[in-house]
Image (cartoon, rainbow, N blue to C red; front, side, top):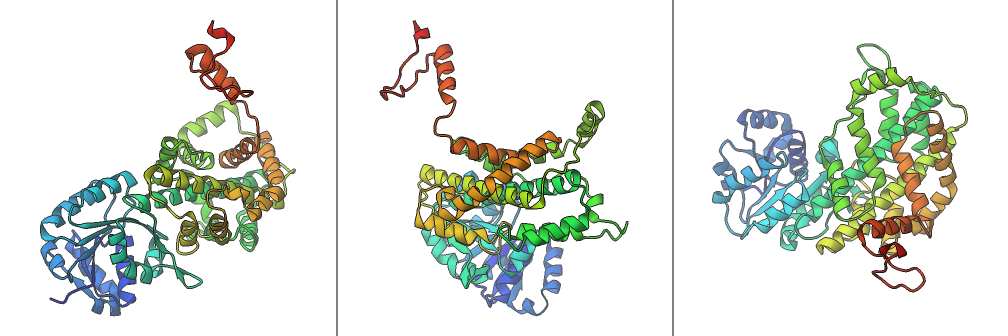
Length: 465
């Protein structure tokens, strides 16, 4: 049996696309799928690339088809299926063999698997870009041991998306660091999509625009500061016609957003890190609320529909609000990555994260180049402190405030835009109101406070007597 340079287990949508990408870049690959018929179908779909693919029916044959030391990519559902697959592989592997988990794993699971790898090498690999990205060049975020990354890097960099010739694949630290970066990527993705959906809602419900006009608006926005994959596909979705009804496809899509959990993981981990990501949290909450369709319909009947029509917002102001919201959302995401890197000792290069996200992934956008530069120039600073993003906020925070205020006055829910504005206002207020909270905590629980005038700690108010 010929010896393949790498193996892949799991020929679902992403796994099959990644396998073809690997083969197309000149690497011999062995594949195995639990359902053998899927392997047969895949080989037919592979066409001329099948010459570089070794299909196998038995797991032992799959392992035997690989050159040593072996490298195996797992593209199976996150959670128990990964552990089951590793358990099945272990008796067949030798010291120094490499397992690469390319699924959407929880970074805690990746930490545990890397720690339990023993004499095997283990790499947790976040892969972004969907089926098209996997097939033609994804963005990839790796974590594990340096030795594991060094082994896998030549192939991963070869198949990755490229930005100005630079592969969008990098190593971000030990254990689950790569999967954590992918989790935050997905949290930002949730937030960016929610911000866009809120802008769509204002255009549709507040300004009465039809889908053709909305598509044109997003097409124009995609030629400016908001240029991104998500803005681009928003225009395409708005313009699409339903082949059944002949009308806009948006009109037949149920308004309940699905989610696989990674956005929720971002919100949960942010709380553990005491990291403020209110725009991401608002986006997760909005998806949860979207699922309650019957209850929402009942409450509209009970309270009446909000008077959504408005004439006091321009499209330029909505664009400005989106620019400000996007900058604030990414600021929160990168701050969370920095907090996690410090907490876990990963030494994650945030500028490198921005560079990896510039192409191939779902959140790729024109802003990420400037973000990479800002994070490299002033590591540890807030993204909104960088001149280019401070300018964005100076130019657009008034639009954000106006859009949020007018949407609220007319009953249009904009939770992510509102969260962005609240974060901005809180962060630029030198003296906030938490002194009242500390006074309350001391009053009912003698928790103490720090004096503003002397800096003395563990102080108590006169109520303590």
